[in-house]
Length: 149
Image (tube, rainbow, N blue to C red):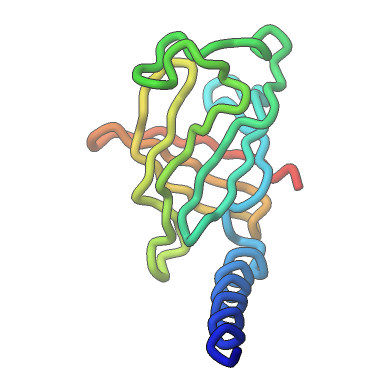
């Protein structure tokens, strides 16, 4: 009985501890974001970023452009090819860079061109904005997403 209680207590403390770190400072990428096109400034979609065991993933929850709401990822490769963009996981494997204030090591998919980029996520403006930097080799491109909730 004591071993079961001790194990349950450790699990609860571990889960609460990781969640508290992720949500109390308001400066993490976790949450719902409005994506903003870096070239046109148009709001394109909403992406929900979640954390599981310290690893972030992001999924498209809503497409804001009416003409693209039923779009499939035609230029994607592998299992994403011709799949609906709505509901698609586009951010995978992102982890906190110890003490640097940004999250990296993962990837992001651009459903418009089907390419997968290395990604760095950096909360800005007290967590109200997210700098999303996609890398292809030494080159990169930034987008600034706006927190929706």
